[in-house]
Length: 263
Image 1 (cartoon, rainbow, N blue to C red):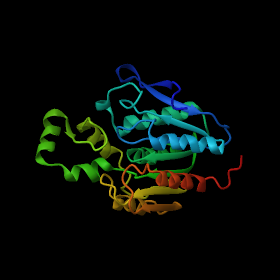
Image 2 (cartoon, rainbow, N blue to C red):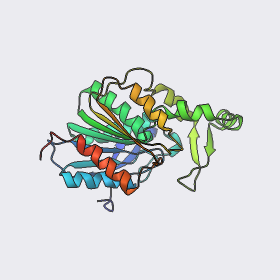
Image 3 (cartoon, one colour):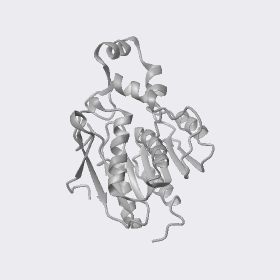
């Protein structure tokens, strides 16, 4: 459970080495592994991550949670982070578990990483993704949501210092966005053409989300024409979607991905 010490997996080589913290609740290898992919500056002990683990326990499934480098209990510097780096870590931990069947649950930035992960897994053919639940997904957020709102001060800070800071509604510490993150984001864009996940996708999106506008979720739907996509718009929902009714909605979305999975 959440109070147990995490396991660690070393990812990267040389100066790029970092120890990634992860927790795996046990379940049968022949049934889907639920994988939690958290958001920017969040960790595996958040409300939704623990709810996912509880759901997995109730259904007799295994659940994997992890902290990206610079997050939670993992090593590495947050400022060294990028979509490519955090994706590499998530894929390494998933591969380490050796599960062949996956359901990816991505929150905010984790939704972007989930979309990149399914593309890489489909190429590698190492594990099959049987469903995805994306909560306030923020694919391409560096280009689509941050860059258009940057003022002269932020742009100058990026050029001069390599980063800029902004107030966070969720932490006393400011959010830090680096030039590395912004540049790497462009290399990981997914909203550029048809996204083929090869599995059902359920998107949960609050319409009162100040960080990821609900229209961004609708834009994602437009890029998923080949998949079975359901989007649930929560009229009074915020970015976190962590209220009891929001967690119940997440559980229903997950349960809908398991109708043929008996165990």
